[in-house]
Image (cartoon, rainbow, N blue to C red; front, side, top):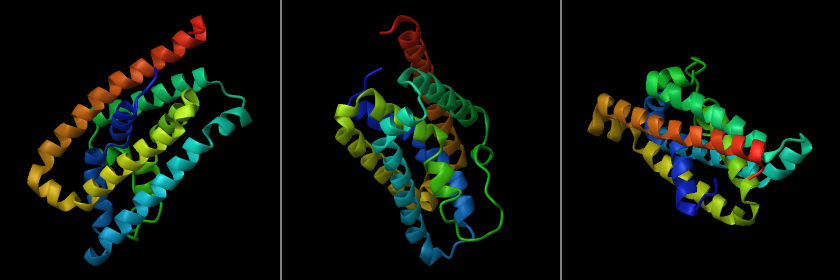
Length: 199
């Protein structure tokens, strides 16, 4: 399944799920001093971008090192996306990723990894880079825009939650989960088709 810049951007936004991350983000940031929340949010988004960009740029070398085919990555990535999508639909936000419960200021875990740069996001950027490596600059651009949008949403977390309400945030997350389910199934079918028919 080939992607355009727009479809890659939409796929990344579905996988990163900034609206679905709001409940977890608000919960984790509750113990952070209000004057530091914006700085912490930006730092975690930048760290997540760095992790995903590394996976995207080094994706083909990573696959070659482990002797993995693009077909197996496509199927595995689809399965991971499907699991995340099902959790988005049937679980509350706090059940998707757990925090360490220590009350310390978050650093990398759980906001950058796995909330933003989780297994599904890593699999997605690897897949984009391995399927169409000649368009790597576009994928990096799509990732940059997607992470910027996530950063804006997270910076406005408290305001958005008050504006939309918990029910609306939950409804948006479930809708994104439904769309992501269809994307995941398409990825699995495309990988199986390439495996069995070589197309």
